[in-house]
Image (cartoon, rainbow, N blue to C red; front, side, top):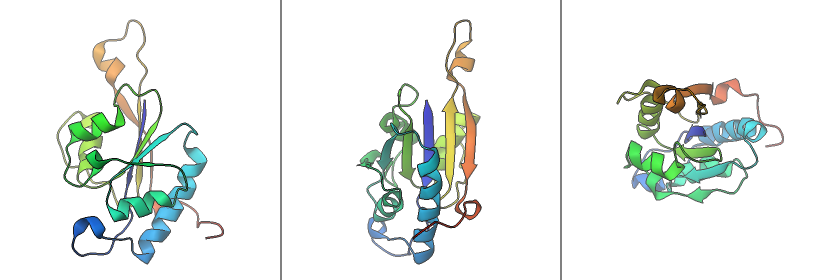
Length: 162
């Protein structure tokens, strides 16, 4: 399975938290990452986003169909996010657009198999792949995950025609 974690771009401070919108810098970050993602995401990728304004604005930069998924909100758990994504059984790649600290906790759980608070920077993408199980593999090998890519907006060229 392919699981792509995309943290929302920079947002304005304020309350209520769910209504915080992207800053001008955040919009630029979202566009840059969206341009990169659009070139590498498989066409059949399921895209799920937290219901907050800043995550919706971030994923809208991608210009693809997406679904709002309440289990990706700021007050969720690793188990809820994994259920929403269908990890590890989904046959399609899944892009999750969400928040810290849960995305970092999910990455730590899948890659380090520990409960830790790893930091995923704003607007950055972590692409996690699961090794396909094969005959003769032990359970740990069959369920292992590896980090396929990490991309930050400052490493993506400036967006074209935006």
